Length: 294
Image (cartoon, rainbow, N blue to C red):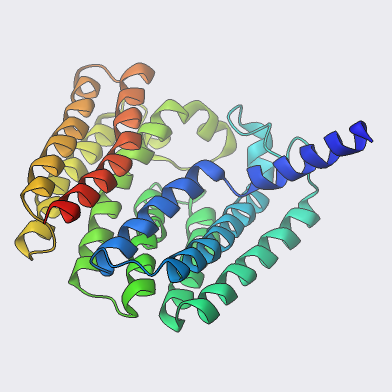
């Protein structure tokens, strides 16, 4: 009985791992952010709950299908060789079926329990992530910029779930997320460039090993993040607490990249990655405090 229970736990954990829980958490954070701002803090908890359930299935299913399509490359890379499919815990066929079903279930939940716009945005996000971004990684380094589009859509989905519309505030959140992703993923690409090269992925640090273009791209997107992150104040969506808070965390994010200018190393790239991971939760906390104090 105990062995059978352990077996089911291993299988369950493997299916959860297929859904890329670390990325999924970030997706849910940004979706909540969009919902919170779109609703102006007036949350309908049943609506929010169904939105999160639907988004979990849809975004998680997209992660599964991404791993299905990259199963051969994942076998080669040290970073991914222990994932459920290359390690043999889940068969490719079962992963494909599971991924398709979860995307469909998530989309249907959002269509029925939120609105058509949110369901459409969810399906568009999954489509772009799985069928455009994933194969593009083997073609051009611009995959990062293209992949940042579905990566920036979740807050728009949250906004749409709250308002059944897409307003200027939603597009500002999209722009913030779009810019945030570039330093984050370029840092990962630098840290894992040997793995990516083995797998045949055309990441920027792979095609130009000296790292000069990579750090230029990082600094360029971080520089743009400053003015874009201030737009919520200019349109009256947020106040002074947000203003000072976002300046601090964006400056911290920018400063984390400066050591990479002088020494392009794994250690310095990891500093950028750490700052990027802290940025989104900090942004969410700042927005909640700002709204609560207004």
